[in-house]
Length: 317
Image 1: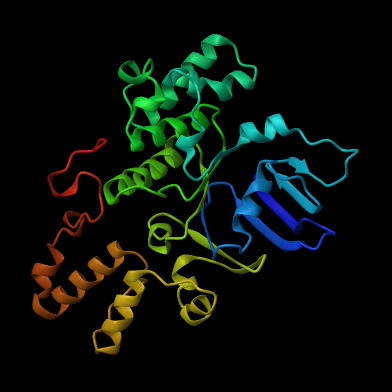
Image 2: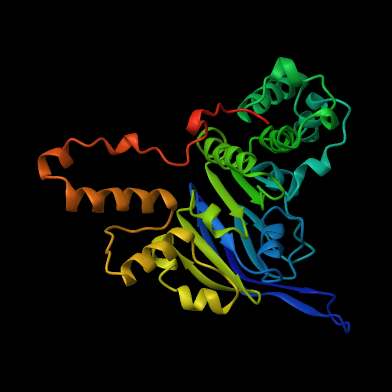
């Protein structure tokens, strides 16, 4: 199963003095199971693109096929938007602002109810979704969403999408406005949800270091077009081109390059900080520790960037 986008174009305020071409002939195939990162400067077209994937924007021209659900601009051929939105879940930036019911359980149940499910199935999905996002169902189900912490609100908002059991989960700037610990929790949650709920995940982020934590490939938008669609280890070889459109390469890649300029060559594809730290440890061991000792080093002990590290427990703050 795939998401296939062919020659997608979109124009805001067409045929007016404010006309702006947001998407220009976009072609993209997303495989089932992909963990896709999308980056690009403000106004590059990335948000307009994802709005098409669950029918929030009507097609002006082009075609989209989402797991055999076809979207076309022909007004005579109606798309099955209910099935599409049950297949593609969208988590907007600051999703907690969309909470509106008087209890958490009612808010999470809103989507499944609109899918026409019976009460028992709705209740089952609500309980599972709340637990999947790391909250205690019995403790939180009857609380007002507005009484919760910022991190808890965001988890409840995500649970409302997960309760519809989408095959594809799209998140737009999922860590916006969170402190470093809250960001770490949400990033870990996204990885968990990919394993347990939605096998295909698409994340938009302005923070390239966040994207490197999980994506297996990255799409770069610029001026309404796809500039790059590459695996991470290949994309960041194009540092000059990325910099020319206002994008930075990850800190780990920059540090590895600075070390190389100083005569310290690190082995392997270095994209994330985990990659960098492991490469530094390996380079040190290669130079200073004999082979017998090196073979007995347990590199799994170097568990970088895992929630709960440094004595912290997982949970909200």
